[in-house]
Image 1: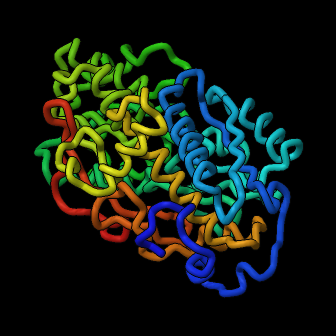
Image 2: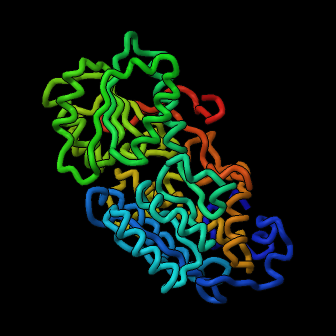
Length: 406
């Protein structure tokens, strides 16, 4: 089963085996949003506003589900993907998710984007017992099955990622004086908390912390403050727009710190190119997924399959935008999770299947990184590898680091 990357090609017997139950196809059971012919999946994404660079994720997911439907659907059912523009505004997210749950009667919410936006609906989704599955944010709060059994993350959590940066700084930069820029919300604070934990007794090495709002037009003044602090290390916790601005402004004022950039802004097309490749040299970030601009993957079978899929299904898209690879990978995971439900399309069974992946090879994850979940472990990806920007692409270095080793 795990050798098949496409959820729509496997037969019923294989699917029943994968779900861990030979009776999965014997009895049809449905909750709202599922039927003999359709599975209704909801989503919110910032197609507009300060985080609109992430719109490519939802566009890729939509294209992937359409390709699944064209090939016969999931166990004969077509996926109806309802994706709404919340502009990265939590009040809009609340309004739209209520509409999706109470009016559209979705089976599950999938890949809703943004820490503040998902935080605004966190309790609601769990009260309604509607899956809030594989959310597009790495906040550590999404891995709390005891208190929020209907919410699960996808990517490595921000806290652990920040611990890894902190330890790398301590091991590699002599007399580090650290300046931190972070978005003034739960997303930014999650990174900061992990970073301080990673520094441990060396937390006093942070000489300046400045914040910004997601709606701020620029972060220019914050970058000037960080340079003036005397910092020789820059921990940049910001989304694509602000990340590109920060990289460019640092170059403009001739500030050349050791630069660590959060993974969510590692897209070559959405961040590094707009910032200016010359300005981005040497920046370090964490990776868990292949980057299409890295020539090391040119002969990789999964990358070749993704490129062919992109050419067929999103011919005008920029393959250098990492959001397309992310969207494709998480859509494959969602399709596989639905497949494993068999004919028992209940919300409880969806969460059960999501919480039962063991060493599952998801296409385009870095070698050595697999999907692992359990009823008490809602963190599907718990490993990263560091990479450095060189020329016009990322270059991996070091070993794959797992969360427990940090």
